[in-house]
Length: 470
Image 1 (cartoon, helix red, strand yellow):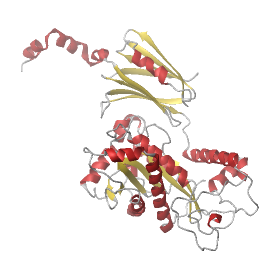
Image 2 (tube, rainbow, N blue to C red):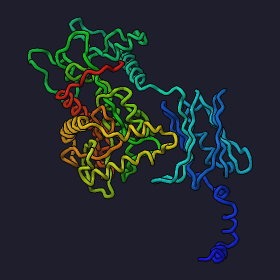
Image 3 (cartoon, rainbow, N blue to C red):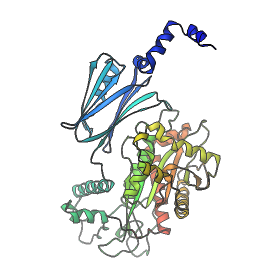
């Protein structure tokens, strides 16, 4: 078609749009939704619109605040809703102000509680989302995962002291806690000099032997130990899938994957923290403990920073039809997927960064390269052993979708120095299994099964010596 014909068909309105260009076309943008995702790691503010927003931002250090000028907008109720969504316990944001800074320019000012390294970027439409303008507010002093473990132990110790009752003289000595010893050595928790209560017996634990010794005198899954000493602290990294902007799969009843897998992971954390294996104390570490988005490479990095001995990513499966059901366990593959279904699941889970919203420009190239490094054969073999142990126990809770551990190129499993598995607890797209996933009873049963699988793995594969700074 000739240029003259194109212009004639566009008419006066089309000519005006061509003359204004894409920057001015965005003046008709309207706000679809605004959301705030508070977390200790960082707080995310999302402004979703039906057209790409042009924004400029600048940061003021004293007092700390971030100002964002959004062009092509008038002050509308959608932006004012941000003020109402702010929670008083947000660890990073003190207040939000919105005003008309100039014609067609809205200024958003975020008052901050602590020094922040902000990232402001836009995301193209993906999945159920339209255009998104994202403000990620990262504390300049990032949280240390090791400190998170210590804080968790302190909270448990305070609760134990508050609930403690006088014990009879013949009461057995509580099992030692290496993490508690570390805190006591640092002088951070004088109260920890009192031994915490003995860990509770884990579900379905084998009956202790010999029979002449009282069962309650020994911690569950613990072999004979030397008094006052535990040889090795075992750290299990639990990774509840999705979170924040990324809901994961959504069931026919509206259940979101990110919510049910977090509930299961929290229950599993509590069970792990009460368990020992062959005299070694177990301690759980969560890559996220609330509803916020964590990029795939950050999940792996967090686990490696605490030198985790295992990495267990918890998910709920989904498919286009409601018929598939049952649980599955996946490990990494260095030779392609073991089935078309495994390949499809891996591609779906690897797309989490796109849905959750990753600032690609801010990704460290070295991290990207490390994520793509293929794990060793030994790591994959250990992952298959771990997966088999967990799958055997999960079969006691419900149906299995696959009778053996499947393999595919899951990005979140590519840590070369720890066995890593991805657990699909059930099909959230199946109406019956969606109801089970929402059930506290099923969540508890699944947490019990995963714990038994972890314990069974370590009983046959004792942890190697490691100079962990704990």
